[in-house]
Image 1 (cartoon, rainbow, N blue to C red):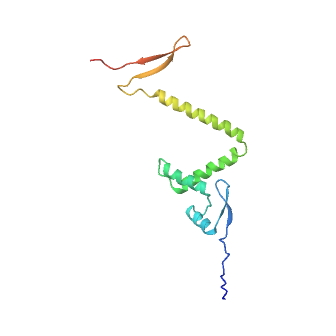
Image 2 (image 1 turned 90 degrees about the vertical axis):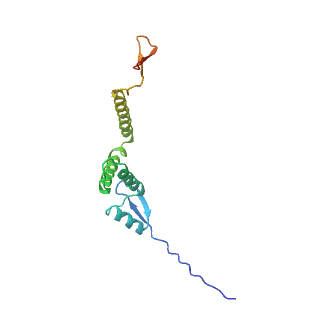
Image 3 (image 1 turned 180 degrees about the vertical axis):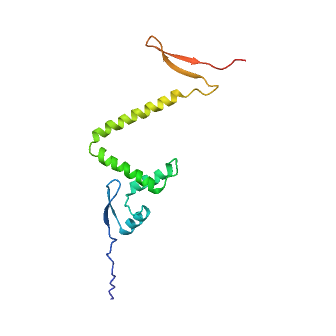
Length: 144
């Protein structure tokens, strides 16, 4: 009976814990992956979430945005978030609600300011002197 000895290599790839330069999130990654990401982002370590946000910002920008500009913009946003929102989440909620109300208000103003398209019937719900609403219909269609 012959005994076969198999040498199994127990070497696992080294894993390093590294912190994102944008958001501060720590990830465990291999050195080769860390090197690849740092090369792509000009020497800065960016976590996967921030990396995707930067790539998305480059795609969605109206004006052509370089990778460096998108990264700087995202880093500024993360620094603002870490400085204000993480320190006082209740204040953050109030500011966020204020921003939502402002956005909704500005959207309503822009829709009201637009004239109706030609040949369309515009109808507005108008409040009369009583509490009962009525419909005020403008018909701009010529009858032949």
